[in-house]
Length: 417
Picture 1: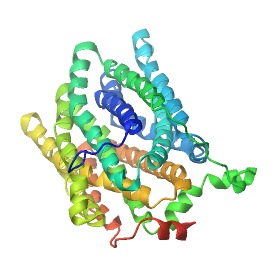
Picture 2: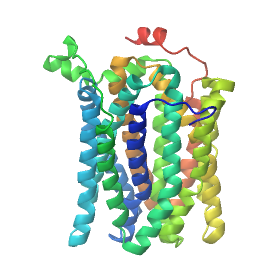
Picture 3: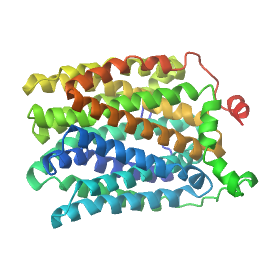
C-alpha cells in the first residue's frame, strides 16, 4: 500500500500482485548475477561486462519491436504466461551449462537477449492488463504496491544472493531467478476470469499496414505533449543509471576488492528508501498533486549519482555507495509509481500495449547504447572517471521533466488519435 487506509483491489489483482512479487524476489536474489559470473568465472574486463549488458538489451529491444502490436491485439494473460516461461527456460540454461563446464560469454549474451525481449513484452501486456483490471482512481495504489514490492525484494534479495553465491557458487541465484519466473506463470494462470480478445482494426490487416503498426507506439508518444518530455527523460535517466551498474561491479568487485556479499549489501540497504518512497507516493500526490510530486521527485533523483565517483575501499567506500544509493532510490520510489500512473492515464486503452512496448524498447536501446559507450569510456580512462561523467550528465535530466500540469484522459487522448 502507498499510504492511507489499506484498500482491497480484489482477488484477481491479488494474484497478479503475488505473481509480480515472486518474480521480483527472484530477480532480487539474482541481482548482478551475470556481471558477477562474467567477472568471477569468465574473468571479463570492464568492456566485456558492459558489452554483456549493452548488447543483450540492444538485441532484445530490436527483437521486441514487433511485439508491441502483437501484444496489443491478443489476450494479455497468455502473453504474460508465455514470456514468463521463455524467461524461465533461458535463465535455467545458465546453471545447466555451468554444471557441465561449458558456460561461455556467448551463452550469457544470448540469454540476456531473450530475457530483455521477454521483459519488454511482459511489461507491455501487464500494463495493459492492469489498466483493464483496476479502476482509474486505484491505479496509483496498484502501481505503488508494485513499486514497494520491487524495493522490498531488492532490500532482501541481493544480500541473500551474495551469501548464496559465497556458499554454493555463482550459478545459485540464477537458479532462483529462473524458478521465480515459473512460479509467476503459475500465479498469473491462477487469476482466472475471462478476457476478451482485442479486435484487430482494419488498418492493421494489410502487410504495409502491419509494418505501420510497428511505429504506432512511438507516433502516439511523440504526438502527446504530456508523454513526450517524460519519454526522453526516461531514456536519458535510465540509460545513465544503468550504465553505472557494470562499472560499479568492476570497480567494487575488482579494483577495490569488495566481497560479493558486501557488493550486494551496498545496493540492498539503500533500497529501504525506495520502499519508503513508494509507500509515500499516494499520500504525497493526495496532498500536493501529481504533477508537483513527479517534478520534485524527478529532480531529486539527479543529485546523487555523481557521488558514486568518490567511492573508496573499506567501510568508508561502502558508506558512500549506501548514502548515494539511498538518496537516489528514495526519489525513484516516489517518482516511478507516479510516472506509471500518469502514463496509463494519458494513454488510450487501445494504445496501451504499443505505447508501453515503444517506451520499453526505447529505454532499453538507450540503456544499451549508454552502457556500451560508458564501457568504452571506462576502458579508455577508468571506471571512476566514467562514473563521474555519468553523474554530471544526470544533473541535467530535470530539464526534460514537464513544466506544466496537464489534464489526463479524454482531451489529451482525443488530440493524439
